[in-house]
Amino acid sequence: MTERATGAAAGADPRTLPRMSIGEVLAELRPEFPDTTISKLRFLEAEGLVEPQRTAAGYRKYSWRDVDRLRFVLSAQRDRYLPLRVIRDELEARDSGDDVAPRRPVLVAVPDEPSAAPPADALVRRAELVERTGIDPGSLAELEDMGMITQRTPGWYDADALVIAAAVAGLVSYGLEVRHLRTYKAAADREVGLFAQLVGPLARQKDPAARARAAAAAQELTGLAQQLRAALVRAGLRDTLGR
Image 1: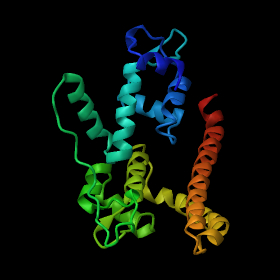
Image 2: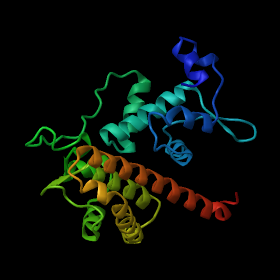
Image 3: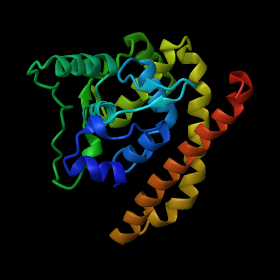
Image 4: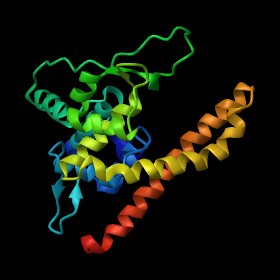
């Protein structure tokens, strides 16, 4: 926990605490939300979900109230798969003091065997996927035709489908078309083939510990690949952004 967090936890008035830079906010949130990036924080600001102060030089300065709002947003996305428009409504109700019940979490399919499905295997119907992610039904159909989203069982979609649909809905809102995203599917397929060679031998062993190591390695490889991809895109856009 950071020095600021220790002070806040000890009962200090958040209004008297120093404001934080975007890097400090990222360090505060990363332990709970490891996939959070500076770009994500900037995006949430652009969407009006948080409004940090700006210095005369244009640097962002976040209050603890801002950090609390960011935690609310990130938790709602991660745990309840809510689209930003719904999260914005909940934040407005929260700010006005209304006692509004949060949207219900995704429906979890009960497996035949108690240990057969981890929490990540929460399933939703098509209509709920569309509502939660804000994706256009036509775009969802295109994604299915391209093989970017598949039904886990007939009529049901898993947590990965929710993440993909929400990401595509965001990209489409910037003017991209679903057909432009074929390269993402091709790149992902190449990564799958590469990583399968690394974790496959462990995953095929009968030893549960070996399979657990395979799952952990796959998760870490996925995270590293995401970081690499994001950094390469940021570096490639520097000239365009004049940075």
